Image (tube, rainbow, N blue to C red):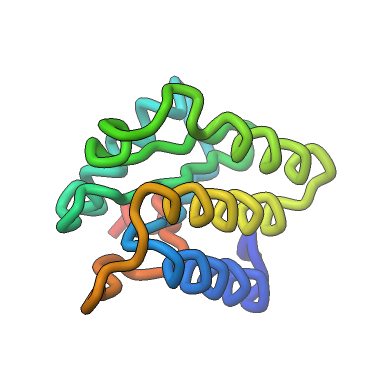
Length: 147
């Protein structure tokens, strides 16, 4: 059984599409079952592996979740960190944690996507001719790693 139903996966992909309409930023979701160490370090590793550091404005965001270990991280590319305050992702993490605590993983991710999109729109509004540089589907890293 998958962590998310087909409907939940579609809702998450649609949330990414909706959020990206308001920004030139790119949002991706990476899911693991386990994360033995620091989720921020793992997210950083996956950020590069998924070529998220190759966007034109260096404004990609990765929301990483290790569901069995109850760990997650949100990281943004260098273009974001050059213009935002240090605590930029804190309210997003708080909103996601509230959903996760109730067992609503999909809703937590969707809330994180929506807030990330709103925040990115402040610093990275949509550009004329903007294209979707990265896929909007969830990346299940354990399946990707085992290929």
